[in-house]
Amino acid sequence: MDHLTQIRGYSDLTVKTYAMVLDEASSYINTEEETPSSQSRGYLLNLNPYRLKIAVLNAKTISKKLSAIRSFVAFMQERGEKITLKGDSPIKVAKTLPKPVSHEHIMEALDVADQQERLLVLMLYTLGLRISELSSLELKNIDKEWVRVLGKGNKERELPLLHSTYALIENYRRDFPSIKFLFEKNGAKLSENSLRYKLTSLFKKVSLHVTPHMLRHSYATQLLNNSARIADVSELLGHSSMATTQIYTKLSSVLKMQNYQSAHPLAKEQNETLFSD
Image 1 (tube, rainbow, N blue to C red):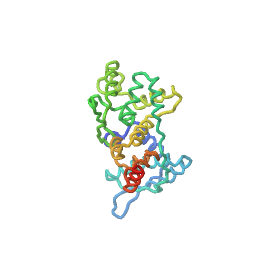
Image 2 (cartoon, helix red, strand yellow; image 1 turned 90 degrees about the vertical axis):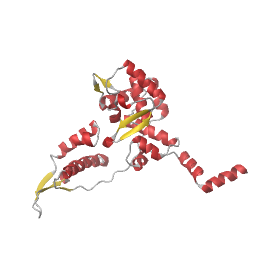
Image 3 (cartoon, rainbow, N blue to C red; image 1 turned 90 degrees about the horizontal axis):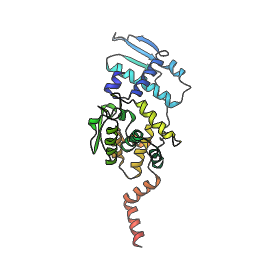
Image 4 (cartoon, rainbow, N blue to C red; image 1 turned 30 degrees about the vertical axis):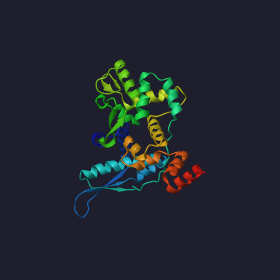
């Protein structure tokens, strides 16, 4: 768990989930000691009894649980343990697009938000932060134009900050003085769960169910639908691969047609002919 937090940079919620999965799985996985020809001791972990236990769950949940076990085994293997997995075959999980929140609904929530809620929404919506990144955001990493964020895998990125958002931060800090983190209480950072609760409670006021990650999707979708390059959006989101960005962002058909019309040489010639006629 320390490795996941300190080295891999996983959020508190993810680390807690991994711990729960490993605790649960340990009661069902059969462990057999092996002594191969090299005489070095090894272990065979048979996952089949555990997979039978979780078979009633949906494919995405099962996949996440198996991923946590694989991560643990990889961690042990890196430290010299000889471990083999049995019953580790992957399951197919359908890729589903997330549901972004419309700009109009976000503005509707901002109309009824207090100062803290407003800053919380705008930091997520205008920077595309993960809730774990916002919870850990330190004041020293915020200036008038840029925010430095430490993301997954301790990967740092810089994000442009709107002048209006920076002004809101300054006003918030005057009313809620903090020592180290942007969102603090009694000298300690507000937890991810606290920030998540504040956000969902705000959107309930306008009869919507909205999570922090949905605002991150909204950020990406707005950028892409307004002609931002997918490579730039991927970098802003802190993705290690553009493929990750493509999975949950979807360009509108209108934008795809506009890009095609402006990029393909024959389409350009056709447009020029139409306008000249």
